[in-house]
Amino acid sequence: MSKKRYTVTSALPYANGPLHIGHITGAYLPADIYVRYLKAKGHDVVFVCGSDEHGAAITLRAKKEEVSAQEIVDKYHEINKKSFQDFGIDFDIYHRTSDKLHHHTAQEFFKTLEGKSVFSKKTTEQFYDKKYKQFLADRYIIGTCPKCGHDHAYGDQCEKCGSALSPEELINPKSTLSGNSPIKKATSHWYLPMQHHEKWLKDWIEKGVLDGADHHDTKQWRSQVLGQCKSWIDAGLKERAMTRDLDWGVKVPVEDAEGKVLYVWLDAPIGYISATKQWAADNGKNWEDYWKSEGTQLVHFIGKDNIVFHCMIFPIILKAHEGYILPTNVPANEFLNLEGEKLSTSRNWAIWLHEYLLDFKGHEDALRYVLCATAPESKDTDFTWADFQARNNNELVAVFGNFINRVVVLTSKYWDGVVPLQNELDAYDKEVLEKLESFPNKIGEAIEKFKFREALAELMNLARLGNKYLADTEPWKLKKTDEEKSETIMHIGLQIAASLAILSAPFMPFSSDKLKDLLGLKNINWNDAGTNFVAAGHQINKPAHLFQKIEDDKIEKQIIKLKANKAFI
Ligand SMILES: [Zn+2]
Image (cartoon, rainbow, N blue to C red; front, side, top):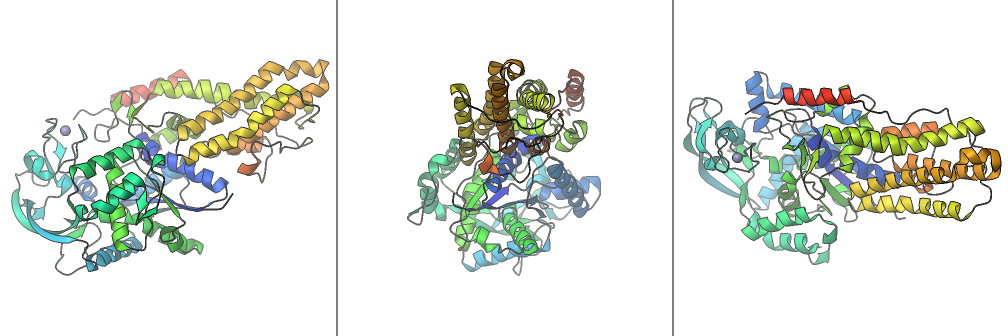
């Protein structure tokens, strides 16, 4: 296997609130599984993320809570960073866009692009609050949604129907600062004319061709990603504002730009680059290897609301700057619903990660497992507490855990925890060993194709193979009648258990570590999996349960809490 270099990013979460399971399944868990696998295979990977600490949503929240924007982002940066850590999302760096290094990096980008005449500057009439003497970007303006009639739609989005909006589309717009009807006032901004980039973007997205050369395999891109890009291109690309009138963010680094900051397009994704720079400085690496070297694979993990941002706008910015690589894949997920309804922060219809981690201590992998098994990879999916409980109890405990428990208990009971000899193999043993050998590749190939559900299903199939093998051969009975045969079966059973310890690591790192401890395995790696690598005579540890059943009352409590806290807006 040749060693490759990867830069893997997860969408930067806004530091204005905690994370819920929709965020996790969209951009963080799949990225973590992918990165853990790549690292286990020995590739050179940097996995970057961080808090997006700018934008109107943050300044607005600060105003509402009567604290500074800095206090808001400091608070949620720490909460989210800790939640990620506790959940085993193992970023190489979790940076912040309020960091000086990021401001400098984003400003350099702007200056380079401005110097290459990539932007057009235009003066337009925009909503303005006379009382507060402020332009009303995005969330500073509220009104009735023209699509669904919801009367609290924001200037950039309606949270009820999910439509992307512009302030002009709102019916009866009001300033969220004064509550007054805004006036229109002239202001100048820098725009990115996306239509100038249409030709190469079309080739790149539809054919995977960049500057006349093959760049990536479009068949590996998800259909919803290609579909959304295509519909944008077909509708005709337009110019997008790259700056905003706001006092919080990365200042536009030119004269006569007082009170203007870079808009999210030119701020958040550049955060991936600044995070890599910080990580490289901290670890004696060269950040340019990860962003400017042709051989490096750049992969962005995002939710579907970020597709155009990462497949069109950011690539335009990178290419226009020159010297940067473009993503080889953007495996965006669809949305996860909760108990049949759309997840919503404003309606508090969500399972918050930091709360789950408190309520279900020791069950981190159960949520990782269920969110991966039901991930919205090709269509929206639904999380229900009943399904969560069933999958934990019927799959993790009854299949995976049961197999491990049988192997460890039998080895402990009949062989004092010492791996028995492998004696003569019959046809069934050979068949099982052959199947075992095929699993690392099956799981690895599915992960490389971003088919995480399929990869996880294969992992469970390996546990099922082990269960069936033991159930069919009943080594506990053979122990009295055919000692040699029972030894061989347990020897093979232990190899399956050891492979499960390795292959489960990307999906369920906590349980993988526990299983490795249980089996006394040290210094093992992905390439050992599938082979007969645990030697006879090796001592394993005392039996302990790998997974715990989740009882009804725990689930009922969660459902009551969810319904009680639901806000009606
Ligand atoms: Zn709406």
